[in-house]
Length: 282
Image (cartoon, rainbow, N blue to C red; front, top):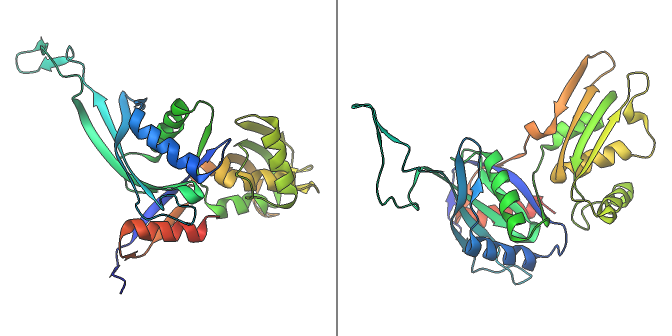
């Protein structure tokens, strides 16, 4: 019988996408290398990040790969032994024979990666900010395999719908990459394939229209395709007029990460996250 714990948790979702070799085995292999090589990544304000540990699920999915991978990420400050100060006697202090492996101001975040849908799940109230989680994985994975990975927060769908369904769109900026094979259809798939064929890691689009000649009056679906691809593969900024009688407003999708609310834990948190993510990410 399932054990149910009525404890609500909220999570950010991050798409970790390989530009080539988009297979589960590749994602699992590179995370093994990430733990073994453990690159230290610089964060803003003098902090750094590295791994504390990784645990691979012993339960396998239909492709004989781990269902989930638990990752504990650390943030800390490197200590300079020549930067100590005694405030009582107002003198600089130098510490002899300092162990450089000792760091300060440690913070830790627990997260879960689901290889079958290449999605990282990060608790919303984690001690390490979402921006630093993105910065760590983007830099660390591309240190292990240069120019191979895109790491993007998944965007809240309703904010993108506001752009797609706006009365007028007068300006659009997009920073996107192509999606995984099979994630798009129709014109969007054709446009996505063109991005992939270009061979570029990231692509920037800037389109300017006006209220008299808005961008969303195109008939080829270009704007909608760009916005839809950005949901898991980048971000967009747009200036819109939501309705005929409303004023212009600016939207930055990067300010609206998708939040997944899990109302209860069934058996254990890792199994619950795995089953939930597999049901909503395709």
